[in-house]
Length: 221
Image (cartoon, rainbow, N blue to C red; front, side, top):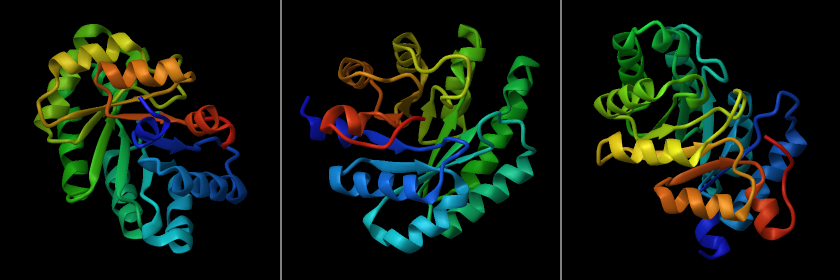
């Protein structure tokens, strides 16, 4: 794959707790220059980025991040406000405690409500695979498909581990034909990027791809 082919699948990401405007602006400038799929930024930066860059950039933000246990109403409101502020893509974190408790119906209902709130925009569902067993992952593939989300996403990048090739391959077997895959967390080398894309990932969330492929870039997830 060429560098540009890879970069077109990258959600250029800066979600550090200490993220500030200088770093966010650098991220956005790089995303425009290298034509990444989007920038993935904290919700508090969505409005200023949209005001500064307008239609030049595709804004992705995170909801219920990184732990996922915000109440559903808060996630819905957060998503609605992010879209009003200029976000085109929403990466939501499920309530992992509900999964561990076997309350898959609650998880489905929450994703459906977020789907309704983000109608016309891209919805990605982060299931945080590092905390889940295989059967839970398979069940969540089915739930994300049933809820009609656009993507299932492996990780926040803040859990005990990030994306694995095995998880992308498992997703590929169990998601519906309209659901895409986003791998995130720990994707650090060109070989990783090509391997995950080749295995079926459509997006990769990373802070390092631009630096890796171009010799410069923002630092750190």
